[in-house]
Amino acid sequence: MVQQIHSVGAASTAFAAAERASREQIDASALALAGLPVVQALLDAVGVSVVVLNGERQIIFGNNVFLAGLRAEYVQTVRGMRPGEALDCIHAWKCPGGCGTAPECATCGMVLATLASRGTGRVEEQECLMNLRRGGQIDAAEMQVHASQIEIEGENFTMVALRDISAEKRRAALQRIFLHDVANLLGTLLLRAELLAARAPPEVADQACNIRLLAERMRHELEDQRVLVMAENGTLNVRREPVRPGEALDMAAGILRGNPVAQGRRIEIAQTNPGAIATDESLLVRVLVNMMKNALEATSDGGEVHAWAEAVPEGCEFHVWNAAPIPPRVALQVFKRSFSTKPGGGRGLGTFSMKLLGERYLGGSVGFTSTEADGTTFYLRLPA
Image (cartoon, rainbow, N blue to C red; front, top):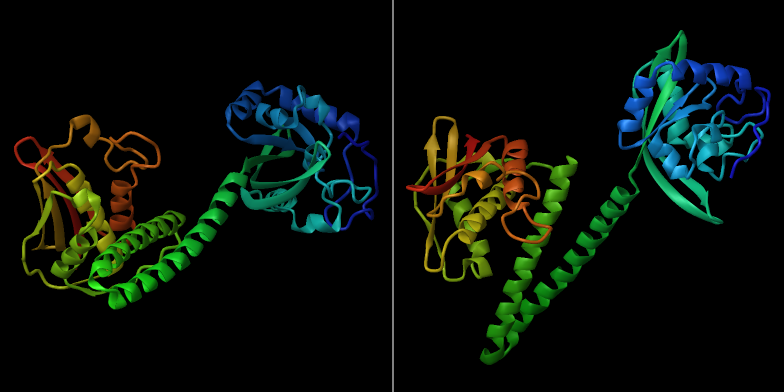
């Protein structure tokens, strides 16, 4: 909804300055920007909303993405307005000075980023949470705001890029709730399965043990997902302690025991004795599990996967081998996130997580060799 823009004094504000440029000044600024069509073309080419503001935070230009979000065909529709007014923020007209002058505007990421960038001359980033009027309803908008400065014909302008992060916010909240609630349910299920297995008659105890094993597998998969989310967010903590490589391999193989991917296949672990290394045992085992699972999936029924660790000058190197070579075109994409040779979405995280955890968090290197003659060997090299 387009409101009439009033000329107001500096006192009519609870936060940012309320003064506005005159229509003549706005038209002159727009004309200066129109003289640089390459700038407008570049702003139209980006995939996020971008507005160019004058010194009074009024819109001089909005790119195609911004105008499409407003269902506006021409930038003249919003020229001279402030961003919150164009977006129809519920606080935009709470004070006569408009967008940026209400008490609530003191917490608005868009206003804060704009003012900070004008003050420092640098790129400033803020998270902006807005409540917008949309078709008679109030909608929540969550945006990442980047504000930067540009000078055109002696006049300073602020370029403000707005990226919608609503879906990211909802997904992160759902992940936290889901992972927390399911973990609690699995804890209860495991406890009851253990009690049932201990107290039930023999004909029932076997089934109770199977339920417990399934619950353990579910808990491991859930924890894998939680660790991967934290690793990608940069919030994963690493706890280094002495770890014996042979024990880590045994733990990884034990986790896969009973997994459908291991049915009809064997994991053979060579008992070498490299010295203990200082690393995060939990993350190391997760990397090894993914290596072994990847090898088992590539192994035919009745086949074997071999795993071993050996001392190298840098520290310790873990290996997981299977007989099948990786096709050259597949080998080029092995560690890419979401790449998978299997159909369907939601795959391709196993090899990606090997690389992410093994290198970024454990400080090692992850790779593989694959030939027709020698099969495929994935390795994780860790410093001592």
